[in-house]
Length: 200
Image (cartoon, rainbow, N blue to C red; front, side):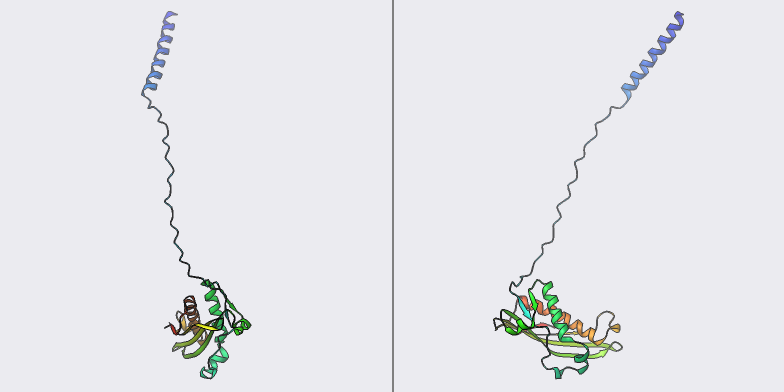
């Protein structure tokens, strides 16, 4: 009986020593290190240089008429509708640039406030989709303030049709000339001057 008690006591003592040794050799738990959140560098927004916007309304007629329709090839006059296109494209380009432009025939004729007059002087359509386009449009214009002229310009643009020119008709290529001229006229309207040359 005493022998059995002694064996149990030795066993319990050994178990306690093992637990103590394990507790001493086990690595101490290190508290978790808090990593501060990474702050992203501030993103610089590109500064937008807004062009000076003309506060006054600029009136434009419904069409940029031909100066002399007899100088324009009959096919261009009957098929291409350049006067309507040019006025529309000027309005679109000017509004995109922040100009307060209104196409109003009566207001343009009345002459009150600012009025832009644009005429198509020449339109040349040589070549075609097969041999290559060679188109050109010449325009002139005047800007008035209460019927007093404050600027004038003449501009020219030519085009060979750009990409996929072989699939474009003559009127479409002439329209490319008008679109570029509309952008030229818009830039001039921001800083109008007398006898300016715009375009090419």
